[in-house]
Every structure is written in C-alpha cells, then in structure tokens.
Length: 87
Length: 147
Image (cartoon, rainbow over all chains, first blue to last red; front, top):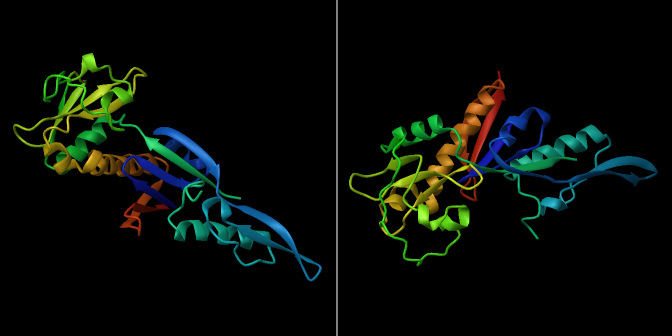
C-alpha cells in the first residue's frame, strides 16, 4: 500500500480501512479512473480508462478483476496522480 | 474504479511535531506563548503563506501555543491556533534562518511531520513502513505492508 507525500499534501488510493488517514486534515476524494466493458469480437472485455488522472486507456482484459488490478498497479507506478491536476 | 484521496495535513499531533524537531536539531518549546519575530506588522507581505490568510488576526501576530526554535537567536516558528481552532505554523520570513532550516514555506518540516503522522496512523491499523523513496516529482513515496 502506497502513500505519496509532498509537504503537507498526502495522496493515496481510497480504501475504507484508510479512513484514519483522512482524519489528519482537509480531505478530498475524487475518481481516478473508469473500468468499463467493451465488445471485442462479440465478447465482453474490460478496459481501464485512466483519463481522470491524465493517463491512457490500458489494454483490454478478458476479466474485470484483471482490469481493476492493472488500474491500481498503474496508479501506484505513476505516483498516484491527483485527479484533475492534468486539466 | 479507483478513487484518490488527497489530504491537506494539519499539524494537530504535537508529540509528533516534537519528534520531528528533535530529529532535526530544533527545539519545540511547549507552552511558550510568544515566538520571536520582527515584532511589528508592517503590512508588507501578502503571499499565500501570509498568516492573516490562514485565519490569524495581525493584532495577534507573535502570540502562539508553542514555539519552535531552529537556531539560537533566530526568529522562531509559532504553533498558533487559528479562528477555526486548528493549529497552523506561522513564521516571519524577514529572518531567513527559519526557511534555511525548514525549507521554502517550511516544506521539509511539513513533509517530515506528514510522513510521521501517516506512519503512526497506519501502524495503529497494522501497517508497517517498508520503504521510502523520492519519485520523479520530488515527492516522498511511502510503501506500507500489513503485518
């Protein structure tokens, strides 16, 4: 589990068990991605769209759980960007 | 379907603040009710960190709950309660010793405090700090594992 800190600014991927961290100051929670079904050769696949944090659409995956896992990995590998900072 | 939480950490854990000060060779003087500064508001600073923009009435400048001394004889940092009852750090930039020690806008002081508070909170939830590294943006990335 990763937490990114710069000065008094902290970011992390929201999880119910991390609400204690949210009590340490003024908090904002924003959507970081969308994971949506897409049709490929008449089959339903799943794709993570990282555009809310200025990222790409990740390669489609056959299973939703794999798309969700990759989405979290991408956020962690890219410093958990703050949604909207890219606008 | 993830969401990102962004927290602007407030300085509320004075024990942690004291630890940060000790580690950096500074002293947190608890219950010191005034901190050393120019001594008179001359209405010459209106930047984002100006105390009056953080809920501190200029007539109360120099008053505090606790004070941080970073160097003998230098101006100090006041730990001040604002109008909302939240602690804020206030200092006078006229003497540059504070920002020389704590970074521009006291960035490194805030960062050390934030890292310690996050680690303390997560430890109480069963997480242990595994590693810390700076990313490309110069931010601290802390990795925790559940034990």
